Length: 607
Image (tube, rainbow, N blue to C red; front, side):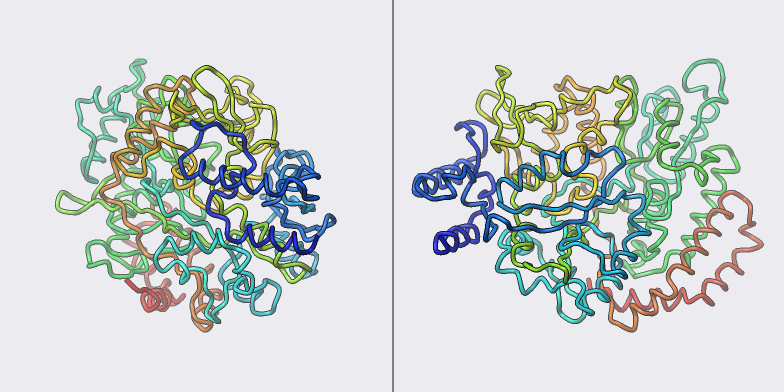
C-alpha cells in the first residue's frame, strides 16, 4: 500500500498543467487539445490502477494526496455574510473526496478580518493554512522570521504547478522573496492580461457627448469642456438641467477609480492608492516621486477644486462609499462614472458609456496603469501545521487551470448548441445552476460564459454574491493564476492574442442573450480598445524593503498618508484654500518625512 501511495505521489509531482482535468468525461470537442491529451493520459493510468484500493474506493488516484484516509488540514478563509457555511459548499465536499484530505474550515467575515487577524496570531489560535490574509510586508517578514509562517522553499518539491507558473514571469521570485531569502507566501500569477487596472476604469456617456456635439475628450481641457456641456445641457431631455451629475465617483482609503483616473491623467504612473503615493513621473523620464511633493500634484488639486466649485464634480465624492455611489450611477444620471465596469447599470444604459483615458495636454502621452503580473499574499502555511508537505500539495492543486477555475468561478459545465451539458470535472454537482455555464459551438470551441442560476429580478443577491454562495471565491478570488490565462488554457477556440481577445469580447456583447455577459463584454472590449497601447506597469510592487527602511515606513507611513488624505479632501472641497495653505501643507509633509519616504522607494526601484 505504501509503495502504491508513493507511486501515486510521484505521478502527482510530474503531472502536467492539465493533470487537474483528469477526473472528467468530456468528449472530443469539449476541451482544448492539451486537455484531451491529459484526459487520455489519465484514462490509461486509471486502467492500470483498476485493481488498486484507491480505484475500489471510487477516488481519483492521481488526486489522492492524503497519506492516509484520516488525513486532515485546517484552513482560514474570508467570507461574505451571504456565503453558505463551508460544510455546505460543493467546493470543500468535492476536494475532500478528490484528495482524501478532510479540510476543517474556519470562515471569518471579511469585514471582521482586519481586527481578528492579529488576535489569531497573538493567541496562537490559527489554522494550518491561512488564505488571502492581507498581511502587510512587515507582518510577513515578522511572522516568517519568528517561525509562525513557514518558509515555502522547503516544500517547493510538492508544488510543481506553482513553480511552473512562477517561472512564466520574468523576475517573479523577486516579488515574493523576503530580505532573508525566504518565501513565506504564495501569490497570484497572471502572465496574460490585456486589461488596464480596474481601479482606474472611467466611463463617459457618449450619448450625452453626441447630444452636445462633442467628440470623446482626449485631454484634461477637453474633459472639462465636456463636463460643462453635461452640466448645462439638460442631457436627459426632461426639461430640467439641474438633475444631472457631470462627474461622479468616490475617494477610498486604497486605490479607487476617481483618484487613480485623475492622477494618471496628470501623468502619474501609479495605481493611485491613497495609502501608497509613490509613482513614476511620466513627464520626467519616469523619475520616482512622492506624488504630493510634485508641482503636478498641486495642479491636480487646483483642477479638482475647480470641478467641485463649478458643480462639475459630485459633492458626495468624499462622503459616499462604493455601494452608495453605484446606486446613484445605476440611474444613469451621471455623465462620467468610475468603477470596474458597467454591469451595475441597467440594460437600457450600460452600453451608453465608453471607456475614456485622458492625457495631460496635447503633447503628452496617455498614462494607463496596469498591475504587475505578480500579486503577493495568497496563502501561508503556519507552524500549527503538522504536515506542511500535504498543505503545500493541497495549495498547489489550485495552480492547475481547471482547479483555478473551480476556485474562482466554477464548476466548469459546458453547454453545447443542442442544449446538452458536459460536466467537465465530474462529480462536483449535477445542478447546472450553481456556477457559470460555458457555451461551446458545434466544434467544441469556446463561445462564452453565463450564469443561469442567477436572476437579476430576484432582488435578493447580486450576481457576485450568488456566484460565491457555494464556493469560497469571496476570500480566494484571483489568488492563484489569472482569469484570462486559465481560460485560454482550458477552452479550445480562445485566442491568446490581443486582437483575438478583443474580437471575443466584442462578440460577447453583440451576440449574447444575458445582460450580465453583454455588459462584461462591452466593458472589456472598450477598455482594451481604448487603453491597451498605453498600458504601463508603473512603479513595481516592491513587496519587501530592507529591515531599516521597512521599520521606518511602518512607523511613519500611516501618519503621512492620513495627513495627505485629509488635506486632499479639504483642498478639493474648498475647506482649505490652496493659494493660502498649500506651502504650509508641503512643509508639514517634509516634517513628517515625505522626502525620506520618497528616497527609500527611489533607492529600492530597479528599472
